[in-house]
Image (cartoon, rainbow, N blue to C red; front, side, top):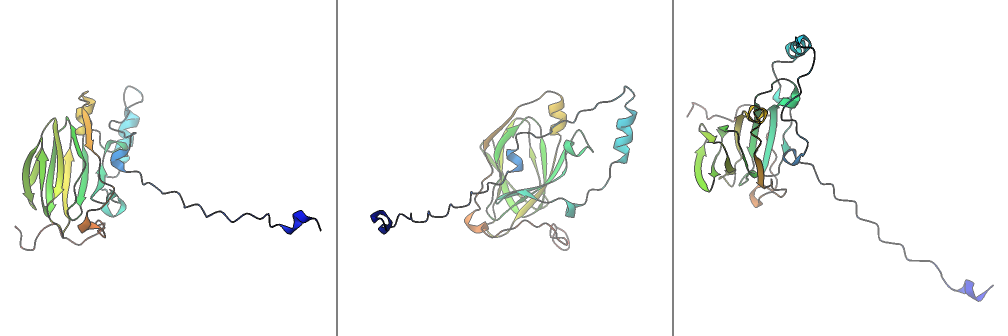
Length: 207
């Protein structure tokens, strides 16, 4: 036996590599959104009319999941990429306890019908408070952000905007100042958006 064989030349096992952290892609960080659909075909556009008439007229909320989070979630009911409409965008926003949206600005207006909860807007540095049953209006060219003022309960709003039409008219200004937060608020650590519900949007007996 050689002297070299008396030595242990084995190497200690390397520590296992930690699995790579998966970073979820947010809808609001998507760089390749479809704001306006192409309209192509013969001059009569008969095929396009036939396609439009074949599209469903009711979209089921249970088939459309919330995206983003963990402070602000969105459920996009209708937008141009869906092939149904071309001039407006309709989506539902759900803000977790103490949560807030991204801070951004755009040319188009937007109307937020507050379904439940209480909170406030900050438009160009000015605060506007809202609660269930109110309508919050985002005016043209406004840098804004939406906040849930309740540290316990969520808040949600139905949002209607004609962004596609504005962009079609070459009014292209849009800017994100602060992205949606990827960490929950201390109050909203275990919060999950309400994918399905009976009817929590309005109090019994009305307002």
